[in-house]
Each structure stands twice: as structure tokens, then as C-alpha cells.
Length: 334
Image 1 (cartoon, helix red, strand yellow):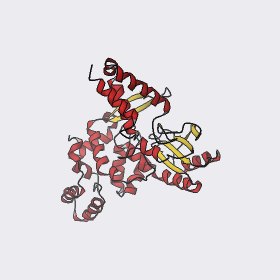
Image 2: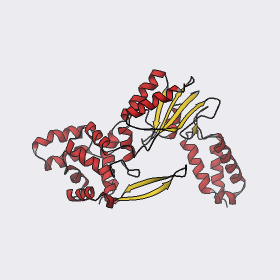
Image 3: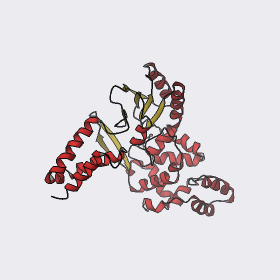
Image 4: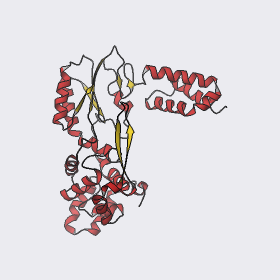
């Protein structure tokens, strides 16, 4: 089984040439139509196997014995409950990588979508709301599991695949009828399927004059003016119409007088980690600068804190970053 690097960089014209040899002339127009859009030109149940370099019988065996091709385990949540992770095993994971690199990564997402996209992340999301005086936030309930195989099937059709290919791809990237947490394809699929919800919430935000972003299941609206309580009900209505369920217990209204955090970053002035975290980190760096033995013992924590500061987008000459670099350097002196 080839590694993921075997498929990079994706070349759809080369893929089209491979499939053109294996298909009758009447399929060539469909092959080129898909390849010209930069996505894998899959036209039947055999196409995927041809391009991945496996036998069609292997894919068929995966589909009829899917439990054998997933590794399931639990991870603890912050609230004390557990999250079930279903991770594809090697053969299926390589197929997922091909689907991700050759199809899903080619679908564009709106700027309001800030998670699971190269060049975007927590800082990008927080920066979209920087300068706001009021925010309203809520979450989507069971985000990945709430996306069912029927939603994924319709997504493949909207991308441009025929029913035969859409059915095969849907069955390959879902597990027990829903989107599995732990699969390489699930984040990208969730963004595409939630695109209809994003359009609804963007329209609502425009009507009120607010900014809107979605970081996975984390929804944020921001405004210079106070956001009324009844706005939350309007958001819930659109979430339901968009095919999702709001986690109402996670609704949060905040004003400029309080610490306004978006994806873990404080946006009152500019995106940066919360004050208490900065206070603890400053104390860590200070002690590590003075005590080389302590610095060596806590080298991993120092490096991790520096990583958070860099991810938050703080300038390289920020005092906290400079202190962190000195602390990390001192860890090598012991």
C-alpha cells in the first residue's frame, strides 16, 4: 500500500489519462470535465481503485467489513465525559488521504470558515472579531456525528460526481452511518456540508450588521453594538433549518467590560492568550531565565508556551516571546 506522499502533488490530467485508457470513449468527456476542475476524475466504482493502485476487490472488502478497518477508542472531554474516536486503519486511511488531497482540498470554503483550512486557525478566527465591543457565541451539538451518510452523499453530487461514485465515496468516508471523528476526511467534509448553514448565518449576520465566523462547531458573532438576547433565538432557528442542533447550554454573551475570548484568544485589544495564562507564562519564563536547572526540567513547557504565543500571532519582538527565547536558551546551559 503506498504512503500519502505517493499521491502528492495531485495531477488530475495524469489521472485522467490513466482512466481514459481503462474506459470506453463515451466516458472520456466526463473524465475530462472532472479533471479540468482539478478534482479526481472518478466515473465509476472502479476508478478510485485504478488511481489509488489497489484492486477493486480490496475496496469492496473494506465496504462490507468496515468494522475491521477502524480502530475505536475514547478520549476524555473537559466536562468529564468522553469522546469516541474512530480512526481508519492503514488501507482505508490511505484511501481517505487520496480523497482528501485529490477532491476535498480542492473545494473552496467561505472566509467565515476558520478551522481545518491551511493558513487559517484560532488566530485567524479571533482576528476576524478584533475590535468588537460585544460577542455572542454558541456551539453545535455533536458536530461530526450529526453529519449523516445522506448529507455526505448529497455533498458528492454537488461537487459533480454521478450517483454511483457518490454512493461509493459516501460509504468509504462514513462509519456506522455518520461522519467519524478521527478520519482524515471528516474535517474537510464537515466544512463543506455545513456550507449551507454558513450561508444562512452569514445572511443573518448581514441583516443585523454583525460579523460571523465558524471554527468547527464553535460559532461566533460580533458587533460594535450590544447584541440583543432575542438574537440567539434567530440563530437557533437558522441552525435547525441548516440541519444541525444548537448546544444551548453553551450560549455566551460578552461585552467589552469583560474578557472577550474567541477560540481561546482575548480580543479586547488584539488577539492574544488570556491574561491569567500570560501571567503564569511570564512567571515561568522569568524563573527559567534565572535557574538553568529549572529551565532544563521545564524545557517542554517553555517550548509549548512559545508555540502558543507564535500561533497567537504576537510579533517576534514582543517582550513575552523574547523572555521565552531566553528561558529556552538557558535550558541548554545546565
